[in-house]
Length: 153
Image (cartoon, rainbow, N blue to C red; front, side, top):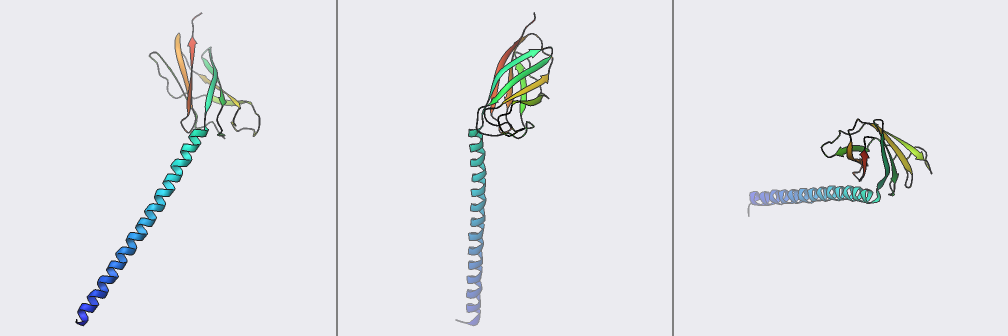
């Protein structure tokens, strides 16, 4: 064997080791990212499982929808910014309602919608006579609906 054969063998071995190292590092990074993604998905799923709301009542009077909702889950909501409200009926679907949420009975943590607390939702919306449903959803997409009637008389 000549010197060029030995040099080629050494360079070939170095290339094989470098490629092997890159594959190992790449797999390590890929595995780490997959684990982090799985942790985030699991955390979001657990948060959804712990969230729940219940619409206790809905009234409609003089163009104002008033609803009372109760946090029956284990998740605390610091703000109502991510809450969505929609009204739909037989041939009507509203845009997202621009309403106002306010706390009714603060048990603990003022300003935070804690478990077992009740909040009030008010929004202005002109509705004709008929049956409607109010749908309210939390920021992590847990929803509850409540049917109500707008009567003429």
